[in-house]
Amino acid sequence: MEPIKSLLVLSFLTMVTLSMCHPTATNGRFYRNDDAIMDYDGYQLIRIKPMNMEQITILKQLENEYEMDYWNPIVNNEHDQQPIMTIIDPQRLEFLSQLNQSNIEYDILSNNYKQIIDQERFEMYTAKLLRSNYYGENFDYGNYHTYDELNEQINYLATKFPENAEKISIGYSYEQRNIMGIKIVNNKQNNSSQIIFVECGIHAREWISPAYCIWLAGQLLTNKRLSSLNERYQFIIIPSLNVDGYVFTHTHQRLWRKTRSRQYGTNCIGADPNRNWAISWCQKGSSLDPCQDTYCGRGPFSEIEVRQMANFVHRYEGKIFAYFAIHSYSQLWMFPYGYTARRVDNYNQLRIASLAAVQSIRSLFGTQFKFGSIAEIIYSASGSSIDYVYDSLNVKNTFALELRDKGRYGFQLPNWQIIPTCVETLAGMRTAIDVLDGF
Image (cartoon, rainbow, N blue to C red; front, top):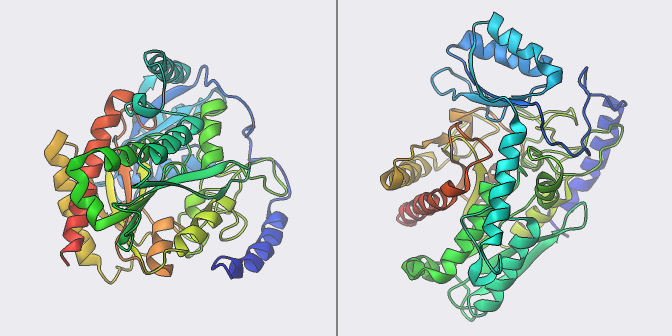
């Protein structure tokens, strides 16, 4: 029996309970349509700069009162709090008045967020016009790509390098899209080496994550300077785990985060796939409200994408050396736990490896990362992939990375920053792997 099936009865009972808790399709006093095409015309993009714990507490209250989507987390102390980016739609202009009344400083980065979205789409379109093909040898790793383009490049790499690459599928999404990945080995005839998993795109709007994963696959197959890494490990890379959400960010709502599953008793759609794993499910840092971006789902592994990924990873139980989950943004290098402040058994080893990794990153372009356990440097977050892999599969080298930047561009990281971001991220990963290999 697959490891996840034992949880299905619990998931079903939880579905019944939660559907009773949310009988209506409303989300407070603000209208929303999770199927709508949004152009964000007239939305303001702002960056909030809380200065003390009193202001941080006020921002938490305003987040609930105005149902705000803060792009980066409110953390546990003022010293680690980064500026908070969010968009203000015409329904929520009173939110700015509340900031003014509380003397909370903020910058208006754009008076019309639509212009930022339009510019991003224009850059993607023009980059493709400059190339005869947008996959294969002409694939532009310095640009963002659609779901179909990512899959075409996976097909190309597996065909181009048949001795070292294999196209894989972990299953199908809620909307029946193939969740594809690529397995990279030094020699298919001798694949007994340990595995490094790289999970990307679990949150739909974090486009730099799939961009990194597809770039990494290309580098592992073409960059001879990585041969020593290839000789020691196999790589399994999933560029876009939340494929439905990722497609939706290209076609409907650029800032969509969750899956696209339909929920009983509400018009709000999807769950947070990184709160849906069966590890301290729906506790700290998660929401029972299906209209919230951190909604944990109707039960552990209720989201088919998460269930498929967990079952797939379990196939390699006992063979996994490390697991990396790639996110954006905030420039953080994190390790378990997220669901508790308790330190993992190999805390010191992970901390040493993380320190070496962020030093390696900084040495290239000066990019500065903070490091530590999830609960230490941001907040408690239950139901995450790396906590599940650490506890349930006993993979002791697990990391969650939040890539560039720290709040200038947020989820719209410009395409000219894609390659530098990828290069420094790989440098950090290599360093961490080398350090852990020495323990």
